[in-house]
Length: 78
Image (cartoon, rainbow, N blue to C red; front, side):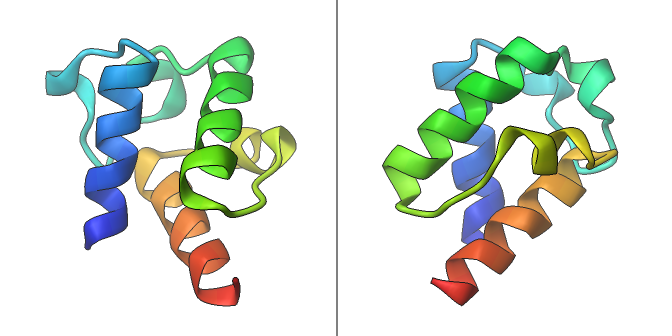
């Protein structure tokens, strides 16, 4: 899934998270995706991918796979 790769690139390059921590089953807390990082993530997703994702939606997710699924859903709807 291409979107997972894009999400991983954003998490590593833009948010400076550790690449080895970025696995689908990892929780937001395990990778260090706190509320401030979530705000930064949604800004990058919205600008780079041209989709509308809100911080509260990402905060409602549990794992990175859930975040990726949200991104895929938004891209499909757009």
